[in-house]
Image 1: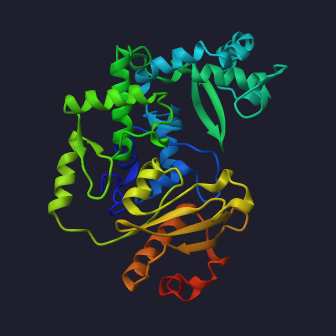
Image 2: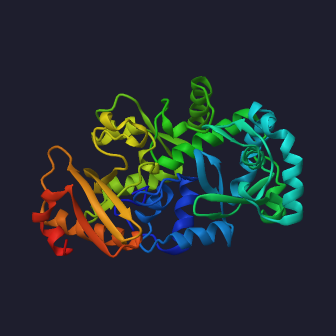
Length: 390
């Protein structure tokens, strides 16, 4: 319920997108587009009328959201810009920045004179060893200015970023605001609270939820202790779990409501591989008995499931995994594989929920036809699949 997934798709419009991202702090961006971009899949599970155009307007027209570095590449509220001042200043001192420094004045002049540019618009000779592989010096220079906060993304052409000078796009009161966390301890507290708020329940253990914070174990432990002592987070003990969990204090009312209230009618949702709820996969395994690995970087022969597999949530259980693939030319969505979790017995009620979920997903993907691949052929006899005319 904290993640707006129980039930899913109850938020609406641009305000629904903003309310979720403000609550979560950020959603993770990934350029792969097999069954929807990760950040779009996060939102389509929560915002019933979500379209990619809504997010594009919030990013590049309204500019209430920003592409930036948080938990790896992410999307976060532009008001959080001052909070990352430390990270931007630190990057200027890095070896990566120094590699591209010779080209930065030339790039700066080009942006000033010509306006928004991508690396393809810059004629600068040379290559450098960059994040994943050798890259053009022009790209390294632009990205260095980006991580240093001198430029931001003006817009994207598919996944190619077009940059402009930050002072042209970010309001001066936000751009020039001081870091609201004046001490290192305050900054660590902010980072840890941000990650707890991103997930809803989190433990004080290393994991992917803390990617991007740069915190060592001792610093993370100290931040948890300070936040608990200040009453900003509350300790929650889950029966059968060895390690305590922590939740933002302002989420306690929701927790109490859940403990006391009735349950909503179960609905189904397809989750993004890097969904905020799944950031700590060891925690998800402990709470739900659902072991999930995103296998895009796993060699084919070593994959347990498939390349781009989405978890299927029904009510408060993970019931299946599916592998949808979109063909843009034919506007076809192929459900390549479907795997039920052990012990799941599909009911008529579950089938109706899956049918509604799939119809929403097909609409979101903008396809005209749904077909079943060999790995999902067994689904043909199911009522919800027949209902969709597959």
